[in-house]
Image (cartoon, rainbow, N blue to C red; front, top):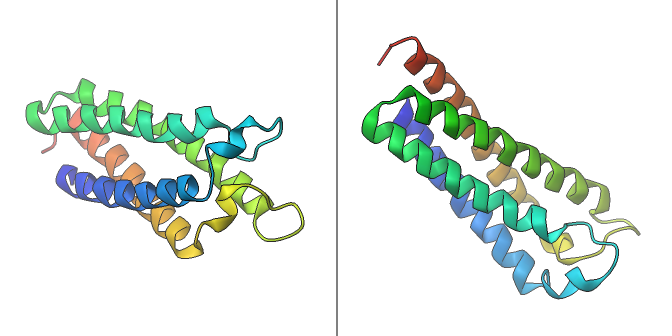
Length: 138
């Protein structure tokens, strides 16, 4: 299950990188100078940065089978998920209508759905694997 989580994680990273590229290509960084922004830069950059930190802990868990790495990875991943949920809700409230603004309005729905679905699967797999590791099950 640990390897399956890693595979899902990598798929989520690819989909997330695609969304980040779309955001940057449509002026995501240039629009950060305005007072009101749908996607604060700290959240946009913190989400993938913490995901990489969590992924590093997960790889260390897979290498060593130390439960502390699994739970550390999950803890950071929980923060990543909260940041991702923040981005999703901001995207949903601004998508389309008269309040849509910013580079995020260019996100394709399929990209957001793919990233969110694979990320959710990753979260669940990491949690289940950490629970199994804590119980001493392979």
